[in-house]
Amino acid sequence: MSELQGKVGIVTGASSGIGFQIANVMAEAGATVYAISRTGAPKEGVGISSEGVIHVKGDIGDTAAMEALLKEITEKNNGCLDFLVNNAGATFKCRAEEFPMDKFDHVMNVNVKYVFEMSKLCFPYLKKSEGRGRIVNITSMSAHLGFSEVVPYCTSKGAVLAMTRGLAVEWAGDNICVNSIAPGWFKSKMLDQVADPAREQKILGRMPFHAYGDTRDLGAMARFLCGPDASYITGQDFAVDGGALAFGTRLPCPVFLSKESECYPGARPSLRPPHLDLFLTALP
Ligand SMILES: NC(=O)c1ccc[n+]([C@@H]2O[C@H](COP(=O)([O-])OP(=O)(O)OC[C@H]3O[C@@H](n4cnc5c(N)ncnc54)[C@H](OP(=O)(O)O)[C@@H]3O)[C@@H](O)[C@H]2O)c1
Image (cartoon, rainbow, N blue to C red; front, side, top):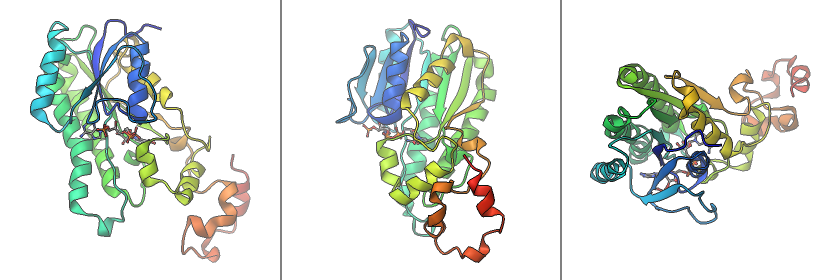
C-alpha cells in the first residue's frame, strides 16, 4: 500500500507504544516519518522501526529545538510538511484531592500546551502541503468518559478534543485538516503506569470486545486521516476503542459480577437494583 507515497511528516512520541506503530504504519504506506522523542530511538523491547522512519531526539517542549528541526526537515521538502501526528503524552495516577500540582502542570504541558505549540510551529509548512496539510491529535476515552485517579489526564484530553475542533474551524481556510483519534485501551508503558489487575478488570469490562486493541489499528486510522481519501474530513474525533463508547453502560461484565465489592469498593449489595443480575447476565 502506498497511499502516503512521497509525503513527509512528524509523529511525536514515537519511541514506544502507539506512536511507534503509527510511525511504522505510515512509513509502510510510503511516507517519510520523523519520529520525535526524548529517547531518540525505539525504547528497549519495542522492536525495530520500519524503513522510512527517522528517529530524532528532541523534547517537544523545547521550542527552539523544534523550530530548528522543522527548518531542517522542510528545507529538504520544498518548505512544506504534509502531516503532524501529536501523539506524545504523559499521565500520573493519584486521587484528585492529593494530586501534586507540579504533576498537574506536567500532564497539561505535554498533553495540551506542547500539542498546541507543535501545531503552531508546523502551521506555515502544513499550509503549503499539496492536497491539504493534516494534523492528527490523540485524545482518549477520557475525553468522553470519567475515570478516577487520572483527573488531570482526563482534563487534558478533553482540552485536546476541544483544540481539535477549534483548530479545524480556524485553519480550514488555510489548507489544513485537523482531526483526532480516541484510542480505547492499548498495552503501552503509559497504560502500565495506571493499570493494576482490579483496574484492568474494570477497563476490559466496560467494552464489548473485553480485550486490548492492536496499536497498528491506530496507525491505520492515522494513515487514512493523512491520506488522499480524508481531505474533506476535519474537526472529527475517531474512536478506535473496541466499542467502548458504544457500550452504553459503565457496569462490569458478567465475569466480574461475583467480585462486585472489589469493582465498587464500599457499595452495599442492597444498593444494587433488583433487576441488575438478570440484566447483567444478558450482556455480551
Ligand atoms: N495506551 C492507551 O491505552 C492509550 C489510550 C488513550 C490515549 N492514549 C494516548 O496515546 C498517546 C501515546 O501513549 P502510549 O500509550 O503509547 O504511551 P507511551 O508508550 O508511554 O508513549 C508516550 C510517548 O511520548 C513520548 N514523550 C513523552 N514526553 C515527551 C516529550 N516531552 N517530548 C517528546 N516525546 C515525549 C515518549 O517518549 P520519550 O520518553 O522517549 O520522550 C513516548 O514515546 C498519548 O497521547 C496517550 O495519552 C493511550
